[in-house]
Figure 1 (cartoon, helix red, strand yellow):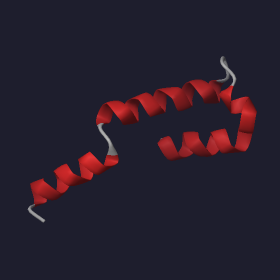
Figure 2 (tube, one colour):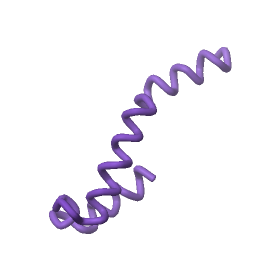
Figure 3 (cartoon, one colour):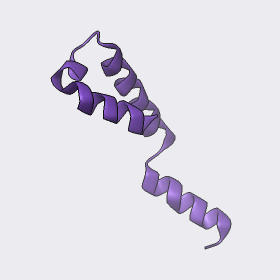
Amino acid sequence: MEFCAREAMQILGGLGYMRGNRVERIYREVRVNAIGGGSEEIMRDLATRQYGL
């Protein structure tokens, strides 16, 4: 989801950052979910520990 939202922002350029725009809202929500879920580095570290690598 994050990849798609980021690509949509790239395609729309400045229009994607305007409040009230659907893409801006989706991008904001995706970023909050990614931050709430933990950083990718921490998640990789956790997976590595669980698999014993």
